[in-house]
Amino acid sequence: MKKFFVLIILFLASSLSFAQDKRYEVPVGDSPGYGQANAPVTMIEFIDYQ
Amino acid sequence: MRRGRLSFLPFFAAVWAIILFVLTLDVHAGHLEPFKSVPVPQNNPQTPEKIELGKKLFFDRRLSGDGTMSCASCHMPELAFTDGQDISLSYPTTKNWRNSPTLVNVAFYQYLFYDGRVKTLEDQALFPLMSAFEMNKNLDYVEEQIRVVPEYVEAFKKVFGGEVTRERIAMAIAAFERTLLSLNSPLDRYLKGEKGALSEGAKKGFEIFKGKGKCVDCHHGVNLSDDKFHALEVPENPVLLNDPRVTATMRFVAKVYHYDDYKNLTEDPGRYLITKDKKDWKAFRTPTLREISKTAPYMHNGIFKTLEEVIDFFDAGGGKGNRALKPLGLSAEEKTDLKTFLIEALAGEEITVKYPEIP
Amino acid sequence: MGVGPAVDKLLKDYRGKIRLVVKMNPYKYRDFSHTAAEAALAASDQGKFWEMHQLLLKKSPQLDRNSLIKYAQESGLDVKRFTESLDAKKHANTIERDKQLAISLDLYETPVFFINGRKVTGNRAYEYFKKIIDEEIKNEKR
View 1: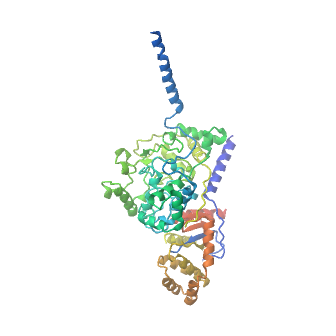
View 2: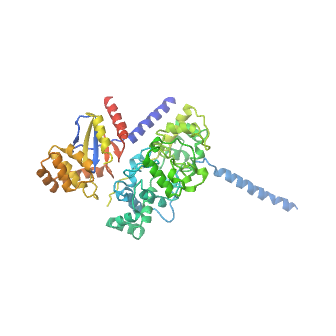
View 3: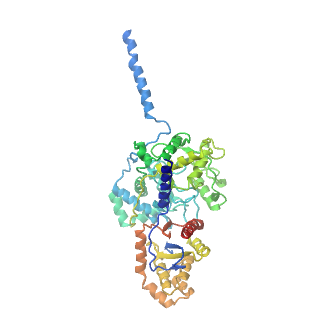
């Protein structure tokens, strides 16, 4: 029973983090930018300069 | 004589029937109900076209003074219609002073805003537009801006049988907001008799919610809110103190609501701003708990980042000097169960909103 | 504007750890949004995207044609080539492609960031980004 309970909690925790940390596939393509292509973090910004 | 005595019987029977009936109604505070239907005012019935128009307006950046913000800026679909900040985002260069509340189940509230300043979504919708520190839009101007967009003109004609007005803008947005509902959550299914809808932990948490935790005293009904105002003495959020822009914001709101000493105001007076009634000093409306796992940070000033902090606050009997709460004495396990209930039982189906094409 | 200084500081503080990629999402009701995007991409053709990008953020909203040409000069660009590119709207297709991508991602305002695919909408404080970036760097190491 206790095991089951733990499993439920784990499942909840994982599904929650998925909901908040949904990852989108955004192609980098030939867009300009700054920094190394092999950097661990890629930050894609959709910008309006005005 | 005999006849007269007998006539008492139906009288007693009737009294007992009424008493039993009242008992079965279970109308005391603390009664939870599953979702049945959403309340819609008679003068603004829901139609698919109106909802679609309201959705377009909701996402339209024309509704802000500098065209950078829409309603969705602070009520983002992907963050359960909040903005995920402790203090809500604001118009560029200004500062907001309260947390952005979720719009999920907003249709159920009898009072809108943390201070309950209006009673319908139709009245509510234009406030953030006009607010100098939110969308900062002139309403005369927004009417004209929308009147020069042929797609909008046609949509208003079709939906309302007439021209663009600020009232109809609000009505359409309100209609869209009434579609943002927490549906088919484990709690709903459990209350309708599906025993397996809650896990063992959530069931235990539910018992604490109704019993020792006293949560139901204020969080009841379909929306888990009593629609009343309570002064819990939540700790002040330090980012609101000593920031002149926040001070300007709170004094501005206080001035608008004819608060006499607005020039010296340094804290959020809550419901008092509206009623000027002493008992409402720093009182804020009970929020819904639906979808609560997705609406952090919590409280009117976003002071608590996690549900643990919220539960600890209530367990300790609320903030210093408050007269609304008493310490609960929950064990660590009881707190965990309560949290499990809040996270698991109150999460409905995901609300998906397809971003509309803005004319 | 708004979020510019926060992003700048992130790139400095996490040198070598972050790569910034810029997609254009000019709002149709702003007069210079499209030409400013053209200017950034024209500078990119000459290998000076970053210089122009920063100037545009700094000078916004002063983004009329004459101002943009002045910024090209300041960035050390071949001004004639730059101006031709600007006037011919040489990158209209690229900008349109980015805008369509934004629509397909349900983006309804600017700026919007995707940090290793995690979405951040609107102007956020440095700490807000920092938290996500720290998590991503930690995940990467694992």
